[in-house]
Length: 225
Image (cartoon, rainbow, N blue to C red; front, side, top):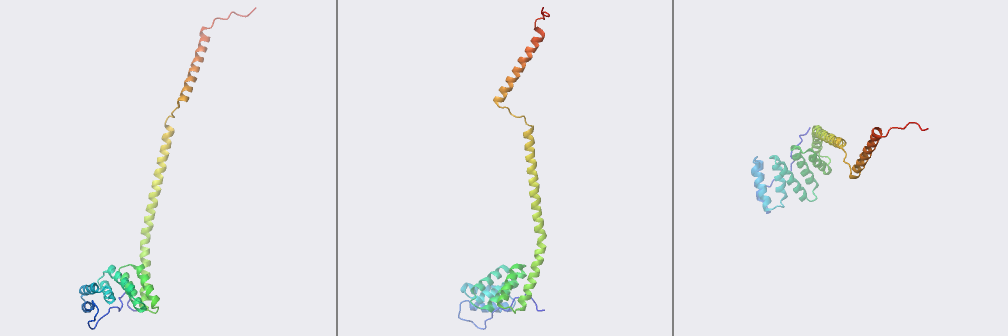
């Protein structure tokens, strides 16, 4: 099986100084890159881009050097800009997406890597390295999703438990409120109080009458003749 997850052969060398601004810096950047001095290479490519932001060779080589230095975010950004600047060159587009995919996969951004490798295969369907890298990225993405799934489930369960507990507390508070209302003596309106007072007075008056009749009534005279 071929080695996979390797940066492709996009690195562009120059054999002589050209007339475009920044090409001199690209030349020295390439020399530093070949010598393994990646930091100097990055510095030279960045100088070339300051002089000529449209120098796509400098940007591509910068992206590759940054990927080697594990500066994934900066590398991907430059790959995207190089892809945007690329005009109708299918082979170049395929290789840029391939190297972008490798950079993303090394940084464990597997979903984005999968997307990049798919774009490579759209342009170059016979690219076996891209196909193998795509499969590897898909396998890693599946592992990543399975690993994160229990955490997501636990988080959802915790949220549900909190919601249930809050609902139970709200129900208890509502029940306590109802119980308190039932235990409290009901307040009487003025009309009800007057009615009750009148009834009590009438009852008292009737009771007095009965007592008077029992204790103070004159004796009976007997039967009539």
